[in-house]
Each structure stands twice: as C-alpha cells, then as structure tokens.
Image (tube, rainbow, N blue to C red; front, side, top):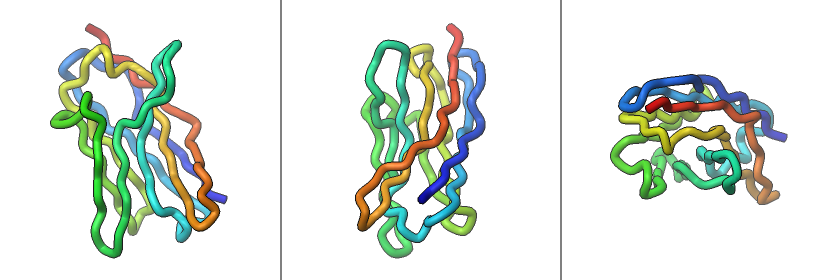
Length: 120
C-alpha cells in the first residue's frame, strides 16, 4: 500500500505560479513511477507530468500543453514529488492528482486531489 498526500493548490491570477507537493508513504520501495494528472469539470483525467526513476536518474515527460511552463521534480530522500507551475492560464484550472505506479503489482495509487483555480 502507498499513501499519497498532496498540498499546495489554491487560487491564482493568470500568469501567476503555484507549487504542488505530494508526499508518499507506505511501501515506497515499490514505486516505479510518479506523476501528476488533472481533471477539469466534465472532462477526463489527463496526464500532466510523469517521473520515472532509473537508478540515480529521473526521467520526466510532460503533456504538450504544459511544456515550458510546468516542472516536475522528485526528492527521493523525502519521498516527495513536486509540480512547479509557472505562467498559469485559466485553462489550467482543474483538480490535480498525484499518482504512484507500483511494481510488480502494477497498481496505481492516487492522492485525494488538490484544486487549482486560475482566474483570468
């Protein structure tokens, strides 16, 4: 079992910044990949960024819509992932979820979600 606790959402004006955090606990040794997803009202949950750890290297991939504005990072010592969001746009408004994919069970775990609202 893996528990994920998110923090850092809120209301911000367009062009502003927010940083989300996600702390993992439990069977963290089994986490292969962590990432951020978001879900706007009436829409499906979409990938924002994903970090895959290989040895001492983290590989990060982003959705096209956030490239150049969002930066995902992982602090392995703190078992925490971050999402730095700059130059926020109203279309970034959504509930943001932290995700952990564990192996060998191949199970996804989700945080409770944190609301990000960008006012125009």
